[in-house]
Image 1 (cartoon, rainbow, N blue to C red):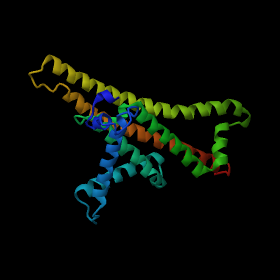
Image 2: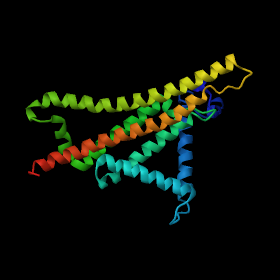
Image 3: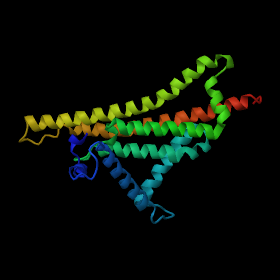
Length: 244
């Protein structure tokens, strides 16, 4: 990935970072620094009547919270807003970073999307165990009736393991494909129309902005659905056992 030559390539040229480390990693660190700076600046002087950056931050949090509560169909879904909102904002920022000249989208690297998917997978299991308990969590894999457990356990395990694979490949494929198309268009313009400034890649960049939102939203919604299914479905089974 080093041959992409982002503005952070000097970290490799001066041997500050090891050669085996993908260039998407320092770009991801930069995204984290930028998002942290925005969070600090937007909350440094909180006002009762928000304006400017604080207003944008509060509107974003409110919109994400409404979406999560809608998915969980309960006000209690707000407890998952920090996780889902962090996924959305972080992925969106990484998607859009590739549209800045001299940078790349960290999500166009499979290592980044796999790390995100594994984090989501672990958090889904964590919330499932936390909300329904270890016994009911393991019981879920056996299914109903219990004598079908030898068949249902492998099926459920495969289904659970397929989720992070699906999350990572979907995000990587879409963002990598968009970045490649934009790069190819820029190369074509440079080679065939070197003396004419024709931004033929501009429509694709506008489309990439739209799909960056969509891919961040899809990833976040799927994680929300996975948590909701793991938590609410098991609660429903538990209530059903008491005649509700």
